[in-house]
Image 1: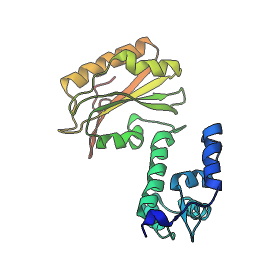
Image 2: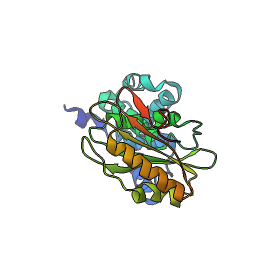
Image 3: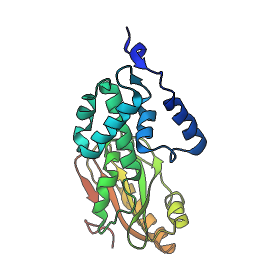
Length: 224
């Protein structure tokens, strides 16, 4: 019998959770119920509620790097479901793990944006900070080619203005080649800094990311 045929779909609570989540939003389900939505179904021996409860216990106690292996130990889980849960956790961390983090120097932003270094195309990212230098948002402004992302100060700074940001840090990745600024990078940085200052926003740094290293305009004395 195929594995899909073995999945236990007889429990009626899971479809009810889907309906309630659709009606009330994803803030409505509990943590365990969110896991039920990710898992989709259990097995005849391990209903989805039990699988979600065991998964939640592991997530709370286990180091992130061990989550997949520990989840696979749950009867009926399998590698696909374990990876789906771990991927959802990682995506959530990337999307919201920065909230309220305080940045005391620009290079401290790197852990929150380093995953962009894995992208095969250039991503230009703007980080907005409030007066206490807490992160307000991390936003992709532009996605370009393997060697260039076209940006305009209006596109970069419109969101920080609407958020009443006090400062910004800009970042972009170099998918290939050295982690060094091109002439275009230096010109764009100068224009962005001047534009930000006209709006009363401090331009703290422009950081270039590669898989193994980074280049900070501020650390290299290219930003006053």
